[in-house]
Image (cartoon, rainbow, N blue to C red; front, side, top):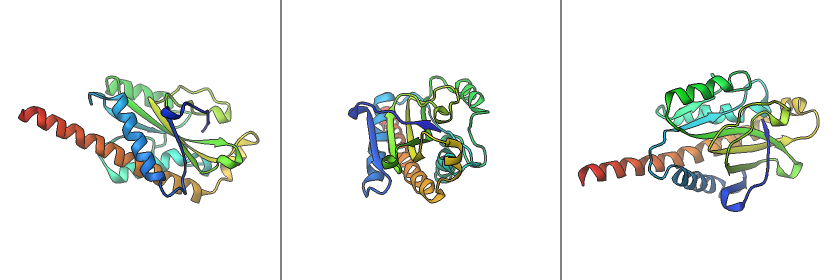
Length: 202
């Protein structure tokens, strides 16, 4: 669970989950970030979906991870409803990533709190995510870029707010994020395979 910050427009996207174009805008933004951060297709891509299934407001990440796993068994996904990535194990998860991959491209996903008028917005931003900041936890930064969803209002009794967040909202946001991530990843992976085949045949 994090707090949101503003960033330059060309390095960010903020779209409400009910926007009819939310899915396509997320897909395009993620794809463009993958291209800019991995132009030679050499970095292994990993998704770190932060959160816990013990609080509805903090299960956005695990829901996204679970949805991604239902789409593909070959994607590198850390953090699902079955095996969450949260405050007590996030350091071990990052250590495992560094041991298994050389300079991986990490996409972090987490819920966040914000102002009332920002509830329901999905934010994509270059740079690392600082999980736990909304709950005053000091955890390692994650991600070459990150996606956060504003699930409720921050600033007062955050633990209670997380427990009383509507699951429907979180589920809808998670579904849109997961589909956008999967389509962007699939497009990027397809172009990498096409590139490799063309290089071999050439």
